Figure 1 (tube, rainbow, N blue to C red):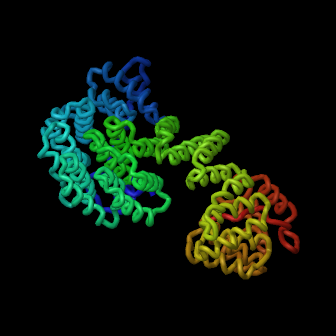
Figure 2 (spheres, rainbow, N blue to C red):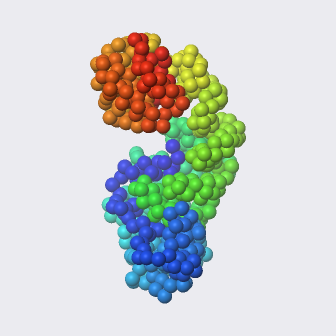
Figure 3 (spheres, one colour):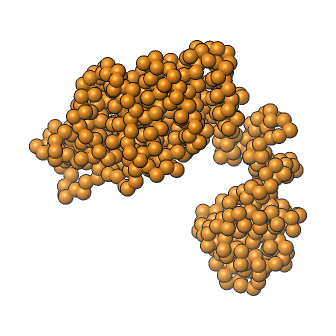
Length: 577
């Protein structure tokens, strides 16, 4: 689990009241109802409309240009100035955003506060630490920007040469988020002041926090490495890897410490401040305040443009907002030498997959897998994309080396993945072997039980055992329409049509748009003599965008009904719940 993932988990579980808004916040991009008319293309109104359209398409940079032009053309540019500012900030043009940030008392208060924060960051980025500190002191930044202001204060003090102010721990009553990251800042700034014992006291306090220690292991380890305490650093990394053995960052840190390599440098004032902004951005993102999160990430990257975790999160937020070009640009910023490169390439590949550029998606994933042959995530991403494109045999082959490398204790999830690929590739005997092994390793996993159970049911083999498996899956996930469908189909195969109807009716309620489920219910209706309802269900299959086989099967049933032995073969495939 990455530190960003740990942070998201932490702030999601915490009752934070400041760094992320708990009530719906304003749409930073703004949506203003128009009265009438379109105006000329060079009118303020026309430029404003163009800016709004650009925002809706996720083109923040283009929107900022339109809004800025509209602001210059309008006699009353207040609202337009706010739009231009927020669009520029969301597009990552922090210097421009700082220049046009709203400052008047008639501006939207949250936008004005964000403008102050933007000006503070820009001053710090320009090396004007004293001016940045002075501006922050003259402005009282309230909700939702107060935590960021508090966490930035010691780093601004350090940039201003205020050594005493730099080591004052940031605090905000009742806010654990500020408590944890404030203590991290104090630890780092104590180290800068060569007050090493006090720095280590802070780090040890952070390590004692059960639900947060994972966020700070690499920071403490780097401190130990800088103090030439390599054995202590290795022991710390080993403890963390015991909890999360696949963490690439920890693996790299341990290898470096064991080899007594060059320790990571102390963060500069700008890098320390950027870290605090990224933390706040992750908090906003966890509370679905994505635009505030994106704004903070842009500010962080202005101070530290090489923060890979920030670029990844920028990409994620832009992808959520349907700005795929912007997301790809962000993912591409992650360097091949970074421990986050594989994650970035994976997200980049899926971005192309979502856009329908499937060959490019697979090619990117393959490149990452070849470049990092020992990286589990890279191999799984490649196999997953092959699977998503129904290249089943290739997907199974891609998983072979990864499963083989695990010896006698393979991960059941990998066996499950390969089992699905083999089954879809027509290699049922091999698929069954993988699925049975996976069930032995994880006998209570609902998706796995359902897949193997349905595969047997649809083949008409081992029916009592299969139904018991699927029943267990349904008990674990009673709201899964797919699993109820499997159970109903199992009873159908046994000839218990009345029970099959009851289960399949429940499945259709939960999955009304699934052609397979509707088709199965139609078959069961036919068997108990409810012929009109059966034909209705088969007709419904044709309205649900069935694939070619589902369509042909439904049309045949509508024409001739079912013979005495039921459908010759089912065209459906096993599904997870």
